Image (cartoon, rainbow, N blue to C red):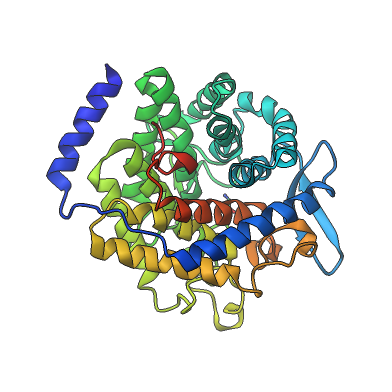
Length: 411
Ligand code: GLY
């Protein structure tokens, strides 16, 4: 019933908003060949990584100078990416050693379904258990996913209209642009239960973020701090960007991906328009390098322009491939061209590690938290995840069944 009315509303909005009919763009055979080679290497590289990670830990990054692998426990926001990437690589390769490792690592994450102290449960649980659900075509993880959505929803304050990001003394009610990524778990929870409460939280969060996080040029602030009691905006600042007024590259990529995904899940054309406006900001930015992998912040000072963020590039590529499917042929081609260019750049030896090197990670040259002097110019587990996702999405452009790899989402 709910699903039908949501769908009917979506179709109405779609009919009203449709300008040009989307067409299915085809992948380029030469790039598919490159991607197939990359994915074969990635599967081998993750077997190298697999051999290095202690049984109760998840990989984070690798510091080449000290030959030091950094890992995390399951509570860290990136804990779902390693199993998630393994499931993607298993879907590509059907290599059961990857599957075995992925399912083993899921067990470490199970407890997090009840964690109400983080807004990152979407990253942690949907990228892992959500991928497992699709890759194994099983409903075995649905309780875990649902409990995770329930835990995430407890962080929603209707007065503010958003899910709270961090619990700290610095800000009263901080909401970061990254949090758009966690909404997919909520849409999924409504999809499998028919309970619209999750959907309403996701839509409220996306609408409030659309209102308060963006500048007139559709770049976004990293953090918006709200008054818990009144919902008023108290401050717009940064935590991981160069300056409060700057455009932190990964933040722009999270926004692009987040609104594209919200359009997929709701068919609300305002989300499509938002995603397109963000894409316009990114792709038209004079500081975006010609190879389309961004510097860690679009407003980084001269001395930091060599610091690229491959993770932002990977998230952008994956989002742009999806976005290209929802728009007319002209815009679709523009987005797909950019995504192709990012994939080609990230496939070059500058970014793409030789199997056995780079601590077992696929990509080099990401920036985690430069102002915190942490994870600067290193591999990152989520750069690998979104790179693999982007490559699978690209290959899938030519396939009839679009439901895999999260492209169609909640089918
Ligand atoms: N969600 C944290 C980050 O993008 O670094």
